[in-house]
Length: 255
Image (tube, rainbow, N blue to C red; front, side, top):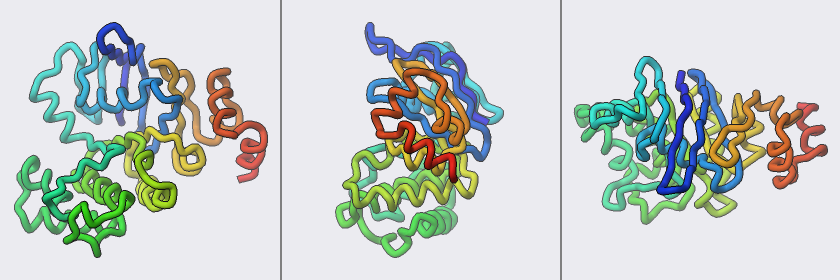
């Protein structure tokens, strides 16, 4: 289980996170939604310590850290237990798809090369990219690059995978191939926290929805309950912006 308690983060005088609390159970997929600038990506980056939170605690399984006592050892342990998939792929251009997936296994986890390759091939197969294992990123589409990035995350066997708007940099026709990979992972009970603006995807795939606004999580609920009967006025307004008022909820209630 992953638990975030009272996380605060400021950049200069700007308060971005204002006491965020969130629980992601083992095997659960949680979609984190909200308007741009609400703090969603910053929260992910604070969980895996790409950004240092100013206050609060994070528990990942039997490991926990307090924002006031972060050091190098804690950062390393946190990143062993988490993996992040970014908007922009961040693949090594000088390495093949397989090389990108095995890099952290070899360098960080110090696995023997044959074992790293075996894991890498299995993960590329899982995301439908085995036939592209020897291709470099320049020869891959955006959707294919993102699938390699997801395979890289799978390979690390983390406690949780954090997705930061994984389809936002893709052309519309490539979005679905990435969402299908994530959906399959959800069906296999991979623990995931996903920042997304894909409302239909969030509805269909997530076990729980967390709605974030102005640095706080205002509402959390099971996916069906969230879309059928949002409680907070800000939540209702947000869903209306995405064209999901009464007609959407009526359709959803028949599923």
